[in-house]
Length: 442
Image (cartoon, rainbow, N blue to C red; front, side):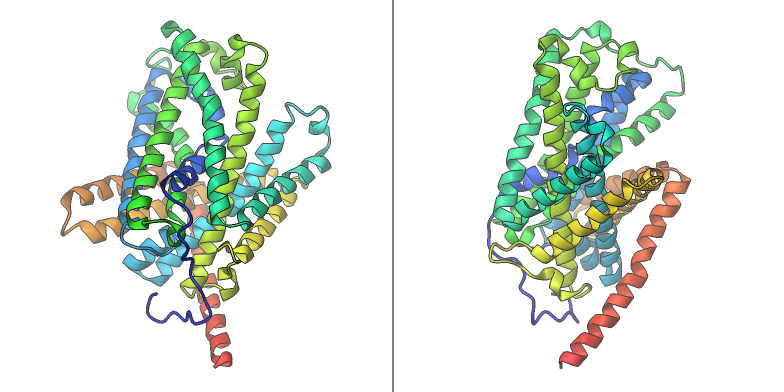
């Protein structure tokens, strides 16, 4: 532990309960959420150049994954990005990265629960006209996932792997059907808008970059991973590559199945794409979307608990957040994070707060990208004198992260940085209270 950290009453996770595939599933399952199911329709107006945006985003995200994987190979402590940045730049920068990631995951959990109920509206008659029942169901899904996670890291890893496999099945169906029954003439023109190709690449890269948020989750539970210095880098990098492959192939498949003029107006492109398979296929896609959301939520709640537990273990958050049950689940952190997500969700169902909720999502996206930038800089600090190839990858990851942050827009950038800055008083207030408590105990 870092110098100055009091850990006498804390026990870090140590049981080696999960391996490569569970860590891979935490990354892939968190990344592939609701966004992919609308992405082909969003990209259709940009034509064939949109694939350039996918490739640019995938390349930048894989560079980030390589940098995070390299950082993960140097530690066996749980906590992910907070630990990497703390070791490179100190306790405050590390805390701010952890703080930003934690807040982002709490808000994302609430947003995913809202999205889950939104998809349920399509298959449950009358639910769309019953906001109270929607709120109850949304809170219920948060706590169902939380109870699974409380059962321990091993069960959480198994459930995440199962959900990831289940969510990939309908996507694989779309990909196979697209390349079997799709028509090349349905693909959009290379540049139907006639705009500057560089401007289109930039716009599509900004649309697709959000699909890779969460790639780092597979590296969070280092203390519970078998051979973490080898397993975590492989899991995070393989996870980012898996997501990139699924995103690009599924987008191409949908575009080959649906003419671009129809695709741009579609509200359910994946369901429309498989309608030729029979009446059973569109509902399967809806179920796949629900499974995808639950898997992403499982990863987000897992991340919030691991992040707050790591902050407690490093001495920058209340010790109770590091309390483990007999299955090595940080149950206090899980309950605390899910309570906050539930409150935020219920506020979202209040009249007039939907816009504010969307605004918070934009803020936290910027905060996540700032965390990726800091990790890239941390890897550059480690490698710039001794490993030139890794230094080059870290520079690419840093440039891509900075590009993505700046491309999010001035308002989102300013408020995202405000969110990061709000962690500064939280850090010093927490340190002061911890110091007082430790002095009283002595």
